[in-house]
Image 1 (cartoon, rainbow, N blue to C red):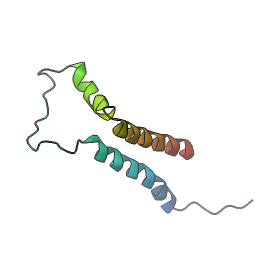
Image 2 (cartoon, one colour):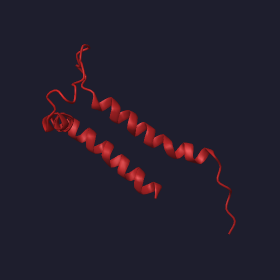
Image 3 (cartoon, rainbow, N blue to C red):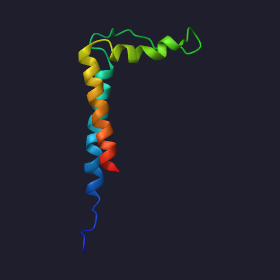
Image 4 (spheres, helix red, strand yellow):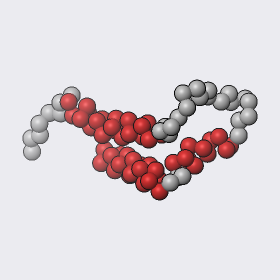
Length: 84
């Protein structure tokens, strides 16, 4: 059985859903009403496990955000399974 040779455009097409999912994840990871003068915390000053949990707590803070994060996770999982 003869098959057509694989072209270079195929990997670029396969990467589009991943890039779209990552862009959507980045768009959802920032709160809408962020203050413009936010300074990132210094790791040595006041570092705690609570700071690591804050993004998870934000994502699970409402049912709408929880469904958005779960949808993105599901899309990424399906993309990984289809890739294999």
